[in-house]
Amino acid sequence: MRRKARLGETLEQLYRTYDFAGRLRHDPIQVPRRYRRAEDAEVAGFIAAALAYGRVGLFLPVIEGILCPLGDRPARSLREMDVPAAARRFEGLAYRFQKERDILAFLHVLSVLLRRYYTLKAAFLRHWSPGHQDTGAALTGFMAEAAAVDTSPVYGSPIRPGGLAYLFPSPRTGSACKRPNLFLRWMVRDRDTDLGLWTEIPKSRLVIPLDTHIGRVARCLGLTRRRGNDWPAAVEITAALRALDPEDPLKYDFALCHRGIAGLCRGRDEPACRACALKRAARDDAPRGAVG
Image 1 (tube, rainbow, N blue to C red):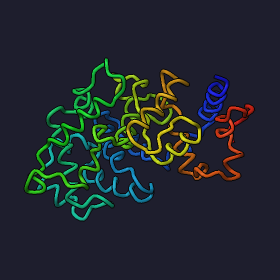
Image 2: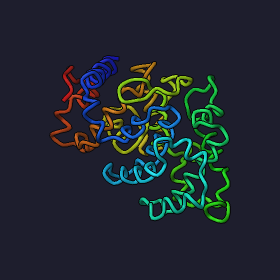
Image 3: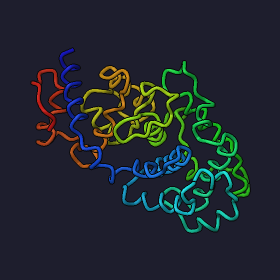
């Protein structure tokens, strides 16, 4: 109990003193924050989150390459999307696992969902129930519906290549779903950098966007015993953080993740680790201290 209280105090201090505004230019959340209309912010956010893997300096130009042709009303542009015309507009656009046609198919799937539900929020809430313990079941349903969209207009047959499937991961396969959970954090949380557009879902039901940075910190702090960064690990880490803040367990996510991005946590036992207040707070015999 002393260790839990000490860790909670240290994380709270990190959260209270963190320079959220200063780190915005290093985070894809900057993309949806530019849009005034909720329907456009959520579309821009989904596109930004889906492609937010690798280095920020590499994926941001690709995101801009998608959003720029969609104009200042991306939701409307996608609802009205014509695949042959879009193929010409996005010609040559690719990123790592996604070939040109994978990105076109990704936009086609979003177009179908937007025509079906008008907004991405309505599409997601179709699978959400207030009785759900977390967003896992709704995310599974949403991704299954996305997977069922006919991709023949893009590929010539209803196939789902790896480059497209990578943009629609699901808890059903055991994936940690880092990027969809990041998108949900942006939409649901209503403070710090996040937008708070989806008030129907409580912050307490979110699951942490688990990536290598969060996984490294979580194991260092004893928040999970799982070795892999999978869906059960994400749920376990979230449960540990929920014990510290039952209403808003993901409040620590941005600061902890960016410690890793900034190179402050490398997951190795080195002098910098031994001087880290988070590491000290996680030890049973550690004194209380400020965040280093």
